Amino acid sequence: MQWLFIALVFSACLWSIVDDVRHRSVSILCLLMLVVGLSCWIFGQQSLSAILQRTGLNVVVLILELFLVWSYFSAKHKKAVSFFDTYIGWGDIVMLLSFCLVFNIYWFVVFLLCSCIISLLFWIIYSSIRPSKNITIPFAAMMGICFIPIFIADIVSGAFCICNDDYIYRVLYNFYPL
Image (cartoon, rainbow, N blue to C red):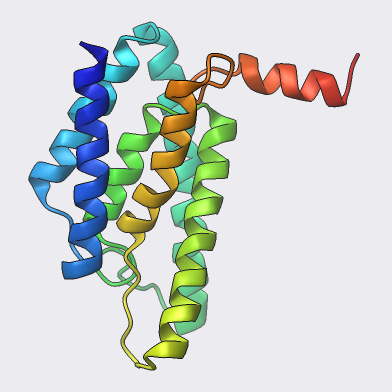
């Protein structure tokens, strides 16, 4: 049954990549598939209390990140700006919230950073090829591109786990033994 949810997550990620690159939007059905697939997959892995605790922490990090980005744009324009639909789409927000379910705090921050860096690199390359004053970055697509290899590594590897802190503790302990 887990393979069905994994297939649903992969399909949704691939669909979001294609949709966001082509139309700069992500369909509601695609986001629903992603949320359902990730929810069912993670509920097969961990208890509800662990999922809620991790998700709550990730949502706090996400709110902090969005607040910092909003603060930057507000300072840049010297007034409070309308952040949603201007700089980040609702599909991006829903996709970020769905990823809050599965990542521990460490991997969520790494995932956010990688997605942002890949998005910026995409923007730099794309704007140098096709200069335009009004370029939009397909952030949901970049998140899908970042998530697929991480998800594959989690599925294939027995030691690596994006939803559990044990792997991080083992890696850190090897670098900094007590």
